[in-house]
Length: 127
Image 1 (cartoon, rainbow, N blue to C red):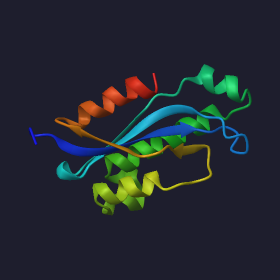
Image 2: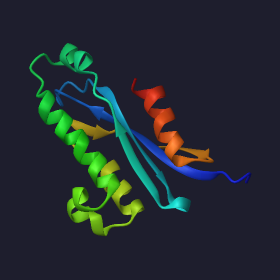
Image 3: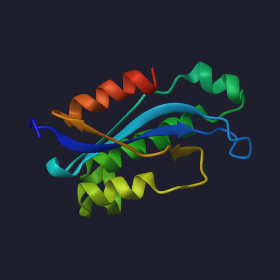
């Protein structure tokens, strides 16, 4: 298949008022089983967030986004998830939740370089 591997990705959404359902994209999660790869990159546009919710806890949102990146990275920042493989960490992160930082729908594609997909999708979906 031309050296391409299947990958999955999901946007990370910030939903400042869960009851309203409005959101901004603030990151992406990428998983490639064939390469045991999972990564997240985030970028919070504070002005867009404040437009939706002037009283949003920006520091709290940034901390939650950093936590997602830490789980993907594994090691000490991942906490209990550090013992899990890349696939389990990805599945845990994309599980539906009713919090300020939520995963969006999961999509698939083919890639030669999963780490390049993280950057491409961050530019396409977030910035």
